[in-house]
Length: 110
Length: 112
Image (cartoon, rainbow over all chains, first blue to last red; front, side, top):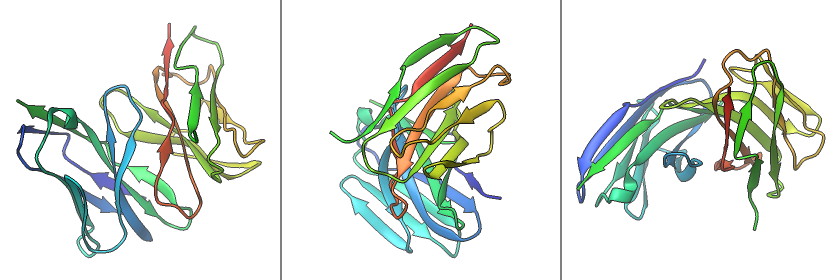
């Protein structure tokens, strides 16, 4: 089977940097994605890593280490609007079915 | 604009009743999914379909049914056999070769 582990909650202050970790166990790994979901809304795509290394998109960066089955999402210059849940998801196996972690609630304080 | 449309946004159902949630996409995506999300929880896969007239059970399919008669449509029926149906339901789609999952705005189902 597949499983993903991420912290349930992370808190930080405005302007700070925060890292949300994700470890996974799966077979036939293809890639790791990150999604943001505000309360009551739909998840929206943030990033995708298929190869080792860091991908940067504005204030958000995502890292993957395939050998460690580990990735993280890095959020810089935190803003209040970044308060949301963040989910990691893996694509694996021959069916390409995405599996999601339980999500990390990020709370940004002024 | 292209996207995924779910309806209704809010639905109340009496115990023992079946209810159908609509999901339509105009993205020309091959694969469609239904996820269930409970408060403070992750997304759990109910059913998925990678091609018209074919669908597969996900991790929590019991008490649910789907159909995929058209590429654009993937309705979910929550049957009376689903013991705890109150939840937020998300429909999603992907192109078979793509890495981004596109979600609808979700449907809130409450059993009263």
